[in-house]
Image (tube, rainbow, N blue to C red):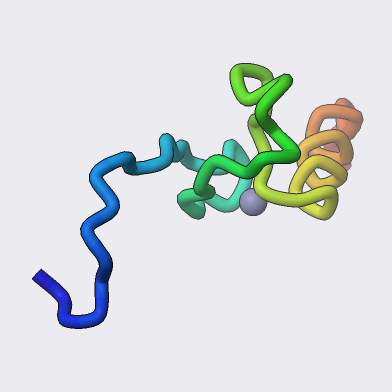
Amino acid sequence: MKPGFKGNKQSLPSKLCAVCGRSMTWRKAWAKNWDSVLYCSDACRDKKKSLISKASHG
Ligand SMILES: [Zn+2]
């Protein structure tokens, strides 16, 4: 128990970013599409895209 933590029984859902693996906590902005949220940020979304588009190996 942390002092100063007010008894908030309702814990927000969280999941891990598909790219960097950071845990991201539910945000109001994601309420509509929480299920389809895979990345913690646009940067990670971009990374994933660039990883996929790199089909050729040099
Ligand atoms: Zn991320």
